[in-house]
Image 1 (cartoon, rainbow, N blue to C red):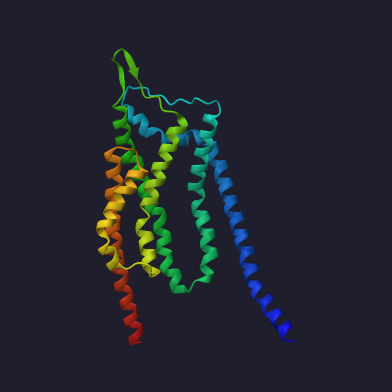
Image 2: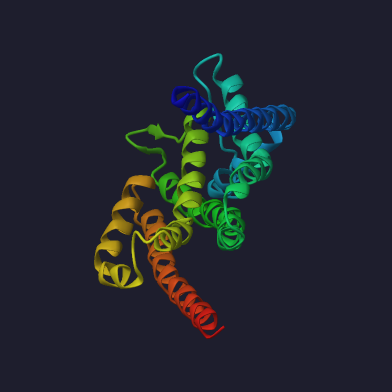
Length: 266
Protein backbone atom coordinates (compact mmCIF):
# COMPACT_ATOMS: atom_id res chain seq x y z
CA UNK A 1 0.00 0.00 0.00
CA UNK A 2 2.79 2.40 0.97
CA UNK A 3 4.73 1.51 -2.18
CA UNK A 4 1.72 2.39 -4.35
CA UNK A 5 1.29 5.71 -2.50
CA UNK A 6 4.98 6.56 -2.99
CA UNK A 7 4.71 5.69 -6.67
CA UNK A 8 1.68 7.95 -7.07
CA UNK A 9 3.51 10.82 -5.34
CA UNK A 10 6.49 10.41 -7.69
CA UNK A 11 4.21 10.37 -10.71
CA UNK A 12 2.43 13.49 -9.46
CA UNK A 13 5.76 15.32 -8.98
CA UNK A 14 6.92 14.28 -12.46
CA UNK A 15 3.80 15.61 -14.16
CA UNK A 16 4.47 19.35 -13.54
CA UNK A 17 8.12 18.91 -14.53
CA UNK A 18 7.12 17.26 -17.80
CA UNK A 19 4.59 20.03 -18.44
CA UNK A 20 7.30 22.65 -17.91
CA UNK A 21 9.72 20.82 -20.21
CA UNK A 22 7.06 20.52 -22.92
CA UNK A 23 6.26 24.22 -22.60
CA UNK A 24 9.97 25.11 -22.68
CA UNK A 25 10.44 23.04 -25.82
CA UNK A 26 7.52 24.72 -27.56
CA UNK A 27 8.74 28.19 -26.66
CA UNK A 28 12.30 27.41 -27.78
CA UNK A 29 10.91 26.13 -31.08
CA UNK A 30 9.00 29.40 -31.46
CA UNK A 31 12.23 31.30 -30.79
CA UNK A 32 13.95 29.31 -33.54
CA UNK A 33 11.07 30.03 -35.91
CA UNK A 34 11.24 33.76 -35.11
CA UNK A 35 14.98 33.78 -35.80
CA UNK A 36 14.64 31.83 -39.07
CA UNK A 37 11.95 34.21 -40.34
CA UNK A 38 13.99 37.26 -39.28
CA UNK A 39 17.11 35.75 -40.86
CA UNK A 40 15.25 35.22 -44.14
CA UNK A 41 14.02 38.81 -44.17
CA UNK A 42 17.45 40.15 -43.25
CA UNK A 43 19.17 38.06 -45.92
CA UNK A 44 17.11 39.76 -48.64
CA UNK A 45 18.41 43.10 -47.33
CA UNK A 46 21.92 41.98 -46.36
CA UNK A 47 23.60 44.26 -48.91
CA UNK A 48 21.82 47.33 -47.48
CA UNK A 49 22.66 46.31 -43.91
CA UNK A 50 26.31 45.84 -44.83
CA UNK A 51 26.30 49.22 -46.59
CA UNK A 52 25.08 50.74 -43.33
CA UNK A 53 27.77 48.97 -41.31
CA UNK A 54 30.49 50.11 -43.70
CA UNK A 55 29.58 53.81 -43.47
CA UNK A 56 32.01 54.56 -40.59
CA UNK A 57 34.84 53.31 -42.79
CA UNK A 58 33.60 55.30 -45.80
CA UNK A 59 33.49 58.46 -43.68
CA UNK A 60 36.93 57.71 -42.27
CA UNK A 61 38.44 57.65 -45.75
CA UNK A 62 37.15 61.20 -46.21
CA UNK A 63 35.34 62.97 -49.05
CA UNK A 64 36.59 62.28 -52.54
CA UNK A 65 38.55 59.19 -51.50
CA UNK A 66 37.37 55.87 -52.88
CA UNK A 67 38.13 53.21 -50.29
CA UNK A 68 38.10 49.49 -50.99
CA UNK A 69 36.99 46.36 -49.20
CA UNK A 70 38.48 43.24 -50.69
CA UNK A 71 37.94 39.52 -50.27
CA UNK A 72 40.66 37.00 -50.88
CA UNK A 73 38.55 33.84 -50.78
CA UNK A 74 35.89 33.12 -53.38
CA UNK A 75 33.29 32.27 -50.73
CA UNK A 76 34.14 35.16 -48.37
CA UNK A 77 31.60 37.63 -49.78
CA UNK A 78 28.83 35.03 -49.49
CA UNK A 79 29.64 34.23 -45.87
CA UNK A 80 29.82 37.94 -45.08
CA UNK A 81 26.21 38.25 -46.21
CA UNK A 82 25.31 35.20 -44.08
CA UNK A 83 26.92 36.81 -41.03
CA UNK A 84 25.19 40.13 -41.70
CA UNK A 85 21.82 38.40 -42.07
CA UNK A 86 22.36 36.41 -38.85
CA UNK A 87 23.40 39.55 -36.96
CA UNK A 88 20.47 41.61 -38.23
CA UNK A 89 18.06 38.69 -37.85
CA UNK A 90 19.01 38.26 -34.19
CA UNK A 91 18.41 41.97 -33.57
CA UNK A 92 15.00 41.79 -35.27
CA UNK A 93 13.94 38.60 -33.50
CA UNK A 94 15.22 39.59 -30.05
CA UNK A 95 11.97 41.28 -28.84
CA UNK A 96 9.93 38.21 -29.82
CA UNK A 97 12.45 35.81 -28.26
CA UNK A 98 12.55 37.87 -25.05
CA UNK A 99 8.74 37.84 -24.94
CA UNK A 100 8.66 34.04 -25.19
CA UNK A 101 11.23 33.67 -22.41
CA UNK A 102 9.33 36.14 -20.24
CA UNK A 103 6.04 34.28 -20.78
CA UNK A 104 7.76 31.08 -19.70
CA UNK A 105 9.33 32.54 -16.55
CA UNK A 106 6.59 34.98 -15.45
CA UNK A 107 3.97 32.42 -14.26
CA UNK A 108 6.47 31.09 -11.71
CA UNK A 109 7.01 34.52 -10.15
CA UNK A 110 4.97 36.39 -7.59
CA UNK A 111 3.27 39.58 -8.77
CA UNK A 112 5.76 41.75 -6.88
CA UNK A 113 8.65 39.79 -8.42
CA UNK A 114 7.19 40.35 -11.88
CA UNK A 115 6.94 44.09 -11.21
CA UNK A 116 10.54 44.13 -9.93
CA UNK A 117 11.93 42.22 -12.94
CA UNK A 118 9.97 43.95 -15.70
CA UNK A 119 11.93 47.27 -15.58
CA UNK A 120 15.18 45.36 -16.04
CA UNK A 121 13.77 43.63 -19.13
CA UNK A 122 12.67 46.97 -20.57
CA UNK A 123 16.01 48.63 -19.79
CA UNK A 124 18.09 45.87 -21.42
CA UNK A 125 17.38 46.69 -25.11
CA UNK A 126 17.59 50.44 -24.42
CA UNK A 127 21.01 50.19 -22.78
CA UNK A 128 22.29 47.77 -25.42
CA UNK A 129 21.15 50.15 -28.18
CA UNK A 130 22.84 53.07 -26.44
CA UNK A 131 26.12 51.17 -26.27
CA UNK A 132 25.87 50.03 -29.88
CA UNK A 133 25.11 53.61 -31.00
CA UNK A 134 28.17 54.91 -29.15
CA UNK A 135 30.32 52.29 -30.88
CA UNK A 136 28.89 53.04 -34.33
CA UNK A 137 28.68 56.83 -34.25
CA UNK A 138 31.47 57.70 -31.83
CA UNK A 139 34.18 55.07 -31.59
CA UNK A 140 34.38 53.56 -35.07
CA UNK A 141 34.85 56.77 -37.11
CA UNK A 142 37.59 58.06 -34.81
CA UNK A 143 39.34 54.68 -34.56
CA UNK A 144 39.20 54.10 -38.32
CA UNK A 145 40.57 57.57 -39.06
CA UNK A 146 43.41 56.87 -36.64
CA UNK A 147 44.34 53.60 -38.34
CA UNK A 148 43.95 55.00 -41.86
CA UNK A 149 46.36 57.76 -40.88
CA UNK A 150 49.18 55.23 -41.23
CA UNK A 151 48.66 54.98 -44.99
CA UNK A 152 51.66 56.19 -46.96
CA UNK A 153 51.16 56.35 -50.68
CA UNK A 154 54.41 56.53 -52.61
CA UNK A 155 56.40 58.40 -49.97
CA UNK A 156 58.39 55.59 -48.38
CA UNK A 157 61.04 54.56 -50.89
CA UNK A 158 58.42 54.64 -53.62
CA UNK A 159 56.35 51.87 -51.99
CA UNK A 160 52.65 52.38 -51.34
CA UNK A 161 51.30 51.46 -47.92
CA UNK A 162 47.59 51.34 -48.71
CA UNK A 163 44.78 50.13 -46.47
CA UNK A 164 42.88 47.32 -48.19
CA UNK A 165 40.77 45.78 -45.41
CA UNK A 166 39.12 42.43 -46.06
CA UNK A 167 35.34 42.24 -45.92
CA UNK A 168 35.23 39.42 -43.40
CA UNK A 169 37.78 40.97 -41.05
CA UNK A 170 36.05 44.36 -41.21
CA UNK A 171 32.65 42.83 -40.44
CA UNK A 172 34.10 40.87 -37.51
CA UNK A 173 35.64 44.06 -36.12
CA UNK A 174 32.40 46.03 -36.45
CA UNK A 175 30.22 43.32 -34.91
CA UNK A 176 32.69 42.78 -32.06
CA UNK A 177 32.69 46.50 -31.28
CA UNK A 178 28.89 46.75 -31.39
CA UNK A 179 28.46 43.67 -29.20
CA UNK A 180 31.22 44.73 -26.81
CA UNK A 181 29.75 48.18 -26.22
CA UNK A 182 26.18 46.89 -26.17
CA UNK A 183 26.91 44.19 -23.60
CA UNK A 184 29.13 46.51 -21.52
CA UNK A 185 26.27 49.00 -21.23
CA UNK A 186 24.17 46.30 -19.51
CA UNK A 187 26.35 46.71 -16.41
CA UNK A 188 23.64 48.57 -14.40
CA UNK A 189 21.13 45.80 -15.10
CA UNK A 190 23.62 43.16 -13.94
CA UNK A 191 24.65 44.98 -10.76
CA UNK A 192 21.09 45.85 -9.75
CA UNK A 193 19.97 42.27 -10.32
CA UNK A 194 22.87 41.02 -8.20
CA UNK A 195 21.89 43.46 -5.45
CA UNK A 196 18.28 42.37 -5.73
CA UNK A 197 19.36 38.74 -5.32
CA UNK A 198 21.40 39.65 -2.21
CA UNK A 199 24.75 38.77 -3.78
CA UNK A 200 26.22 42.29 -3.49
CA UNK A 201 25.28 45.42 -1.56
CA UNK A 202 25.57 49.11 -2.29
CA UNK A 203 28.25 49.47 0.39
CA UNK A 204 30.31 46.70 -1.21
CA UNK A 205 30.04 48.41 -4.60
CA UNK A 206 31.14 51.72 -3.07
CA UNK A 207 34.08 50.04 -1.35
CA UNK A 208 35.11 48.32 -4.59
CA UNK A 209 35.03 51.51 -6.67
CA UNK A 210 38.81 51.63 -7.23
CA UNK A 211 38.85 48.01 -8.40
CA UNK A 212 35.93 48.72 -10.70
CA UNK A 213 37.90 51.54 -12.36
CA UNK A 214 40.86 49.22 -12.98
CA UNK A 215 38.51 46.50 -14.26
CA UNK A 216 36.82 48.98 -16.62
CA UNK A 217 40.12 49.87 -18.28
CA UNK A 218 41.14 46.20 -18.41
CA UNK A 219 37.87 45.25 -20.11
CA UNK A 220 38.23 48.17 -22.52
CA UNK A 221 41.77 47.12 -23.40
CA UNK A 222 40.61 43.59 -24.24
CA UNK A 223 37.36 44.41 -26.05
CA UNK A 224 38.42 47.38 -28.21
CA UNK A 225 41.07 48.06 -30.88
CA UNK A 226 44.52 49.02 -29.55
CA UNK A 227 44.06 52.79 -29.68
CA UNK A 228 43.58 55.02 -26.65
CA UNK A 229 40.42 56.70 -27.97
CA UNK A 230 38.51 53.41 -28.25
CA UNK A 231 39.68 52.25 -24.85
CA UNK A 232 38.74 55.50 -23.11
CA UNK A 233 35.44 55.60 -25.04
CA UNK A 234 34.46 52.30 -23.40
CA UNK A 235 36.17 52.61 -20.02
CA UNK A 236 34.77 56.05 -19.11
CA UNK A 237 31.10 55.13 -19.80
CA UNK A 238 31.63 51.89 -17.86
CA UNK A 239 32.81 53.85 -14.84
CA UNK A 240 29.84 56.20 -15.20
CA UNK A 241 27.43 53.27 -15.46
CA UNK A 242 28.98 51.75 -12.35
CA UNK A 243 28.30 54.96 -10.43
CA UNK A 244 24.80 55.11 -11.92
CA UNK A 245 24.18 51.59 -10.64
CA UNK A 246 25.13 52.63 -7.12
CA UNK A 247 22.69 55.56 -7.32
CA UNK A 248 19.96 53.30 -8.72
CA UNK A 249 20.47 50.78 -5.90
CA UNK A 250 20.22 53.63 -3.37
CA UNK A 251 16.81 54.59 -4.77
CA UNK A 252 15.59 50.99 -4.73
CA UNK A 253 16.77 50.58 -1.13
CA UNK A 254 14.78 53.64 -0.10
CA UNK A 255 11.69 52.37 -1.90
CA UNK A 256 11.95 48.96 -0.26
CA UNK A 257 12.37 50.61 3.12
CA UNK A 258 9.22 52.71 2.54
CA UNK A 259 7.27 49.63 1.44
CA UNK A 260 8.44 47.69 4.49
CA UNK A 261 7.46 50.56 6.80
CA UNK A 262 4.05 50.85 5.17
CA UNK A 263 3.49 47.10 5.55
CA UNK A 264 4.52 47.18 9.21
CA UNK A 265 2.21 50.14 9.91
CA UNK A 266 -0.70 48.40 8.19
